[in-house]
Amino acid sequence: MGIDLLFKIAGVGILISVFHIALKQAGKEDMAHLCTLAGFTVVLYWVVQLLGRLFSTVQDVFKLF
Image 1 (tube, rainbow, N blue to C red):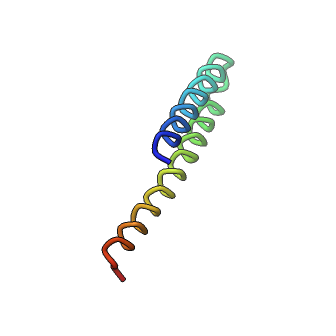
Image 2: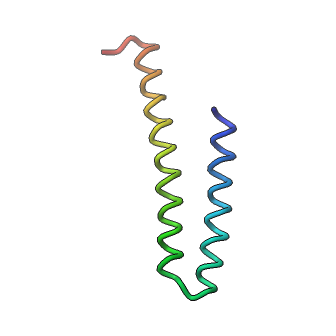
């Protein structure tokens, strides 16, 4: 769970940066920004899921609610 997620995030970051540079060089800056936003959204979705699991684990450990 831990290191896999870091590698996924790093991979998405590298891939999105390559797409952003390629699209910007082609003169499609709007698409480059949308591509970056899509990558950010995917990573944010993964982080939110991970935080949800963390809060669930904390509730189970401390018997909250």
